Image (cartoon, rainbow, N blue to C red; front, side, top):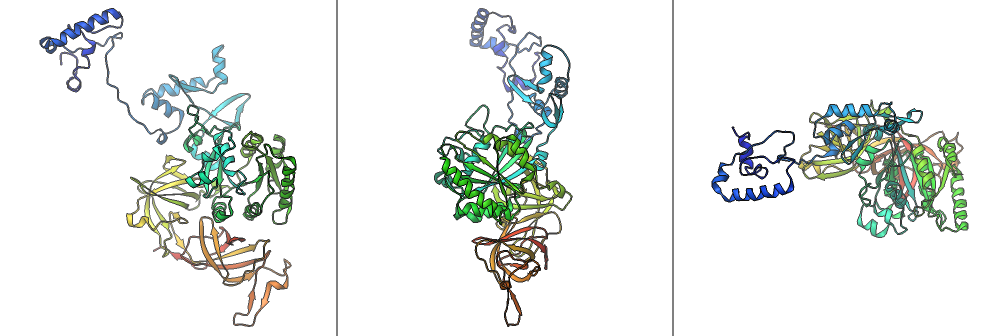
Amino acid sequence: EGDGCSPLVREFEPSIFEHHTNGGGTTLRADTSPNDDDDDKEEKSDDVMDGGEKNSTALRIRKGAEDFTRCELIVQRVETHLLDPTPVALVELANGGRDKKDAVERISSQSKKGGEGPQDQEEHDPPSTKMGNLTLDTTTTSPSSTNKSTPTPTTTSVTETLSTRNVRVAVVGNVDAGKSTLIGTLTTSSLDDGRGRSRTTIMKHRHEIESGRTSTATVHLMGFRHNGDPVAGRDSVRANKRKSEDEIARESYRIVTLMDLAGHEKYLKTTIHGVSSGFADYSLILVNSRHPPTHMTQHHLNLCCSFGIPTIVVFTKIDGCPEHALKTSKEELGKMMRSPEVGRRPFNVRNEQDIATCVGKLHTLAPIFETSCVSGEGLGLLRKMLFSLPKRRRHESKVNRSFEFLVEDIFNVPGVGAVVSGFVNAGNLTVGSNCSVYIGPLDDGTFIKTVAKSAHITRINTSHITAGQSACLAFSIKKEDRSKLRRGMVVLCDSPTSTREFDAEICVLKGEGTTIRRSYQAYVHVLNVRQSAFAKNIEMVNHSAIGLTPSHVESVENDDGEVIVLRPGSRAKVRFEFAKRPEYVRPGMRMLFRDGRVRGVGIITGIPTIQPVK
């Protein structure tokens, strides 16, 4: 084409270049004055009126450095949370996929030392990549990799943070202790107004916001940087917008997962299930400083101790609390902590040195904090304590085992299909079209063979999940099979099994009078499994050695011979049988049984009958 324009450009928008040319085809230059522009516009309008001259106008594009032409701009929407979060990938995205090599060289040059004057300032600041008014931080500093006062950038992956540096903390307490308010204040980094502003940011249902009572078990992330500073949960630009889970996970070096559980006695079974299936490393027992601890506080304390979870006591609402009321609450709590069922010694934390003292002794000490979500008193020490807590459960040691995913909830996402959320208890999985898994058991004990096509971790799309992570899996399941999915199922890669019976070694908790004998029926919690079961057979465990009274064993003349009765403090081997359907359990799982209140805990020791998958 002689005019220098492609036919496609002329056909798509023939008038694009006419705004920059006058009637004689002369291109406007950058040094044209405003008055000349007006004259050119008048000449252009005259040319437009003249149809013959318009048709004879040639479209030309001059390629000089000082010439300006109108170009076509394509705006493309990119899902940034599906991309690689590394600094180089962000720079490449901002530059439209160009200059990747320049971005790498720029980042590496900024991280080098040397120079004088302004370069010395860059030596102490973390390297960053600037794009106009936007600055992207490109370093994550590890506390172990420090050289004097200059931080050394290290690569931190979100997967590693969520698996090896993720501490899970269960928050329990009475209904008016302020559990949701404390979690909302810690995660959003903003104080409460005294009228429930913080708790409304994390509550899930409308009736919870209206009544102020939490009825479901929810999970919230609290992030920390390498130096212990909390990651602000509010957006830096829009103060009323909370940061999403993926934003907190990307910015954090260490994460504390806070599990908000119900405090009302009406929702006690929800709280028991949350503690049983939550894999909590530690627990926060919240006590209202203005009222003495209640029977629910005692029950929550016994529940955590029965699972062997170290406890941290937090007194809330101390702003404006009378001294005598706080003193009374502490005395009542001290009696609970020193009781034989709990066996903890209260330890008041007043400074950072006290935190260092009690961190390694949480199985014998119970740190006590005094906080206020309105004035902010004591929240700094509590944050330092949460950051200092070591990870107690070593899920990374179970990576080499077979894949085991515990299903906590079921969703039906339009355009995606069946999606399950839960916890990766063991092994690892790489999703894709060739990833075949088994999900079940169904009511008849069988499993559904399907394909895990995608996975999410804290709303971040990933192709690989590993032990210790909370994740979501999407399956290719037929429409008629979706209704068969339920909570309490398990996702396995190979050799799925189910059973109706299991043997467990149990210990009856001390407290209210409990009599357990054969055919005793209770509600059993085994991790995420919960179902009614009855005791099929009971066998005492060395009752003569532990000093049980003769009343624990009753002799009755019948065909069975001796009938054994279990009372508080007894230990026994019991064979349980599920009342409704087979479940997936294996030796080594911790169990709990209740009949209104928690009656005993134990560990599964064997599976007498195994039903293989069909």
